[in-house]
Length: 211
Image 1 (cartoon, rainbow, N blue to C red):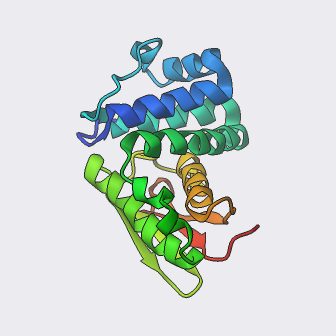
Image 2 (cartoon, rainbow, N blue to C red; image 1 turned 120 degrees about the vertical axis):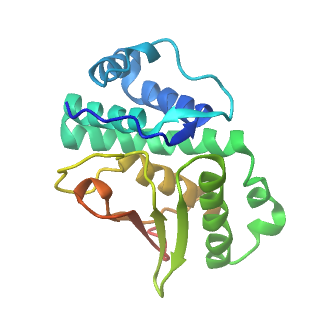
Image 3 (tube, rainbow, N blue to C red; image 1 turned 90 degrees about the horizontal axis):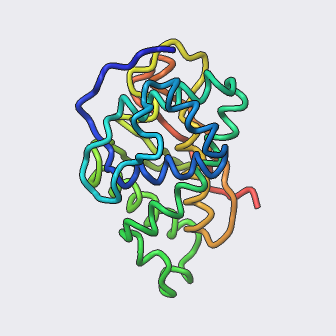
């Protein structure tokens, strides 16, 4: 397994804890323990990070978990599990952080769909940029929103992938869009990824919902 040097950049303990709980939920405790052992993170077995907002979970460890996931389950199996974990992660992340509380207000619910997206996506990006060392920005084109991660923990220092690998982020974004829009589903495609040699990880979110 590819070894990742410590980065000196950190997610919050809370976010890492939520992500680990999500993986345990979708693959079972034994599956997650196998990945943690494979990633050299056996110290986390039955010992998840504390439930606080301290920035102490190194991007390198987060990246190693996702390399271990693909090594154990294969690219296709790992992709499916990561998408499911991302969707599971969303509700706990934003429920716990509380920074999008206004998005559930009645005044927000009656806004036009595109206005909701223009407000909700940058608000979510700010949560990541302000609460962790992950830097995230949102831009808009005629038919899409572009969610760009300028310092990505999911594929930190990963090299040689033949396609984008940040599936947990794709799943999280899909769940967030469904919540912000009041139940609709959207196409989210990772168009750039540091693991394939790009300088950023970029996700294209189509403005028109699938359903």
